[in-house]
Image 1 (tube, rainbow, N blue to C red):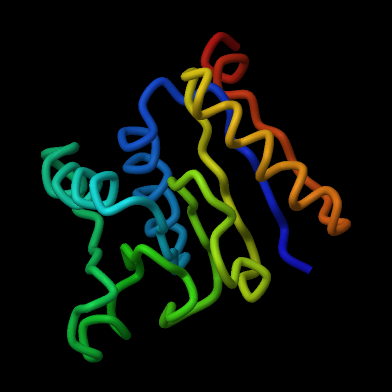
Image 2 (image 1 turned 90 degrees about the horizontal axis):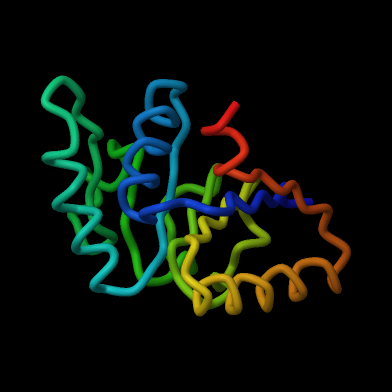
Length: 144
């Protein structure tokens, strides 16, 4: 069964995703990232510029097969056609289609009331289906 974690209180969803992806790639994880086209476009740009010393290799789902198979991070609007199923990072508002095929799912939630509301709906979706959910409060982690 897919392990699900909600990371709450991210000040900036894209900036947090960059740090999370850097850590995942350093740990040899393969990650599929879902979200709206605007968020994915912003993430793509940030992954190139967020750190002068780090590079997070990534591509989009419409890249050539040779690039898709070599890339540890794939940005896509839908996880249904993902080239691997290790970790799914959801930056979108909806429950990602096909999430149950992944070993892990990470949901990132900001401080925005609207984002928190749709996150609660996703939480309920997973809980009703019997998934155990791990809650990580980033605000508490940063103050510790």
